Length: 550
RNA sequence: GCGCCGGUAGCUCAGUCGGAUAGAGCAUCUGCCUUCUAAGCAGACGGUCGAGGGUUCGAUUCCUUCCCGGCGCGCCA
Image (cartoon, rainbow, N blue to C red; front, side, top):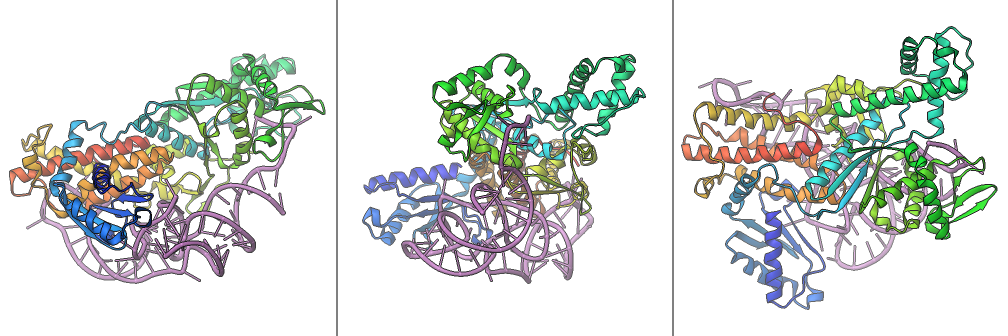
């Protein structure tokens, strides 16, 4: 990042001195491929036509100017429009110093500029325990929240509880029927009901507490069961999420929202803006005017609300609470819902770019290559809690966050359990643990490492592997920023893999404690400490622990 | 039928607001532990970036037409 900023500033200055505009296209980044060796940075400028100059002459002139900068070690023309730039070792060594200035905050950014963002995720109906698919959404949402905070946004994480709809009544009914069944009565099962074992558990719990329960009239019984079951399941969800290191600031109840009259208020807004109309006894929202492919019902002809209706009110409420930006994380099977929600956002008078949806693809749960089916209603699924118990929070989270969210993910329990590179979380954690081991040994030998390193010592870090590692650490800020702007936490896991790779390469070739020179040992310890800080910060963004030993 | 998301090495996937010779891990093969953690390192092998056409100095990336896979198209949530 510093490298990038430094180069950008240099180029801007030189171009201005030559009375030329900043080019329409400028790429300044470390070369992506290792095949380009240890180049520090790569500059591609598309100058020429618009500048009215001979591109080659211009590149030559810029390269010459760049060479005059004290931080630049070399600047060479590497093809049409390309200048390869390497920085001096001293330039990279300062990266260590910059990490030391504030180890926990290195890499954090102010791009967010304090903008308030609400991230809504998981929001699973409390009709059953969370399964593995919810786990992916939870990991993505929680990590995104951490990432955005780190990038300077004011983030608010929220869980929307759909406790008002038909599914919830069905839950109450399912428990109620189980209660009656357990009490030895004849029961007729409806078509759609929750068949999971957990329903029986809840029913038994209720019956144990109140043996007279089963003789209540249906209406009352269902209400009691619904209330109890929902709270019980919600408690379970909260516990599962806590174990998965996921936190929400607010658990927002749909029922409370509806009771507050917010839905009617939202309707009024739509009506005033001319977006709604009555037809066939129902209230419609003309979403087709706003990019949807058909109009949507808000209030059904039987007088009840659609899910969409309260969702509009909910999003309206979010904006009313003052958030500048909303990010919703949904299962990819809800993608058809996006256009109508966008329509609602603009009908509420907001810009559609104030609303982002991250679609999280389904998780293919496998065990040794064989697929495991999941269905809440049929009662057969692998719960998040089971998976976490089996493979651990770290491994699961890293797996979920190692792929971009809109692509399918094979989650093989056997593979994730393995401590191999099929499961890269260990590769990264191992790098951290290795550094800790060296730092520990150093302390045992009485070596004391001052909190700030002198540049005189750092100047001893001139090995290629050292410069590459420092360059990699320098990139962290840039990665955080682009991951935040693209709402893509998986960039962090890839960055961590690369960083761990650089560390392992360095570690294998160069001795730290056995460097044979006390000053060199100190300098290398400083570098390792900086790398440790970056690894720990990156892992924390993923919600994965950074162990001191493994 | 319409729409959304995918198709990149044998496998699992990065990279995609146009940039150099398309990367990583796994698998296979070859080396490396008397030295700070071998859960590691170094190297080899492996590609018509689904297919065709277009846009331009340049396309895995943008446009277009197909093919394949997943999902969605309720007065369900």
